[in-house]
Image (tube, helix red, strand yellow):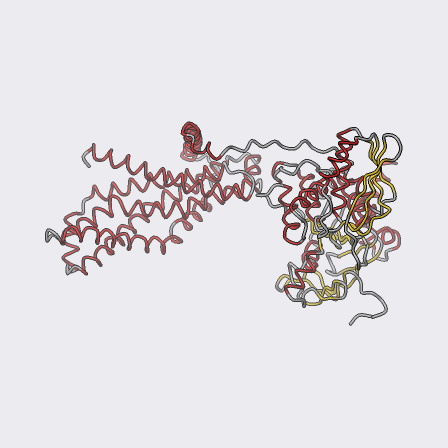
Length: 261
Length: 376
């Protein structure tokens, strides 16, 4: 199935069509995400970015096509294999997805208890470390409802990296965050990616984030309902043959030059 | 792959400086030394500077990072200069990220002792607080009702209609089951006693009066408290969690008018109807038992008719109005005052049912005593 000489791409999207019933969201999506990439899925509102992410996470089955992780199809794998694959992922949901009935420490402890052999004392230390990584040292006994939205995002990130994942998925990491917090989160994502060697998949339309950290990207078009650009966002901005993509990627830059003038 | 057990070596390195040489594989399952041991050794030396050396480190994961972070925090607290050298790639960066923000002081929680829940004063205090809250809520509802009567309230008729449907037709099945069975229970209870005097025929009187005045309305209320009261609390609690109630308030709409009134009015309209239905089925249930005793259906009906009086029906219906109000208030109040987590919503639903049941029993007793005094 895969070429023996070349290692398979970390994630491969193969001819995926996403549809809710008869209404097609996006069709014929094919692209690869390499190990160590910071990959951005971008596009206008309602184009199906988050839906694509849900497909990649295996929460929705594509109506046709396949998604492969290191050459193995997720949707043809057995439940046990799927579980093993999911253990290597860390996911931060759009609204955090923290368990509201648990403290931050309990939220992060849960995956560690379920999937690792760490002793309880080690888990306590690791939870403290993960919280410190996202700048929330000392917030162990807070409930998600007692901290701000930005802190919830970071706490969700701490839970996502609890198991030192190979792939980190983010749904709108900086939505609803102030520019400074959002930049710090970007830096944090890069740091974590570099030191843990993870692949990062982001769904976002925050242009500053995209240019600051993304190494590769795909653009999902709202009108033609398929992907119309694939590549480094900075290159797409300057050289894409699709005016829509250039427009999307330069809008804030154009606005910025106007401001200066 | 051969894994080396994780280890450390604390040694002197010139005046007032120590080095902590880490070796082996610091990964899960290897149970590396806990920081507490290092801490006790460090506290006896108390150097001015501690350098952690990673030149002999094998593989590592979060266990090592957690250890280093504790080292850093301890040194920081004790005024020891903390440094690293020869660390594998990534560790220093991660450590820099992890220590960039000062730790937040730990939250001190005053965990109430389990004995305090038995403290009668505490319980009394809670009960008084609860009652005050209920009264305040009843006040808000009354104000909203007055506005509704003047046609100024933001209450939507569609909401009211939907809640009527949920409270009424949806509840038919369970009300049918419980009321037939309660009628039969009443019948058996009476039959056993009355047979001793050869007065089985009076089972009809017992069932008719028992259902109309007491059991029909009470059982309906209990079912509705569990079914509809808890649902109200859960709905409103979830809306509280989703900031929907905040949104309603900031739109200038009174949440009591918009959310509580349609629910409460629906229950007040539906409860008497359900009660009449439950009464009829309960009497049928009693008839089944009477049939088993050899009383013909017509005989049962004629005997029952002698016991039937307008007063009994009105007493039951009056009770149903009071109970409906109490269930709606208990449910909506629990929901509106719910906390903002999934656990709090569950707590609100529990509160709604428990409070409603207490209200029901107390109100039933009070109404019975009142009517006894009035001679009704």
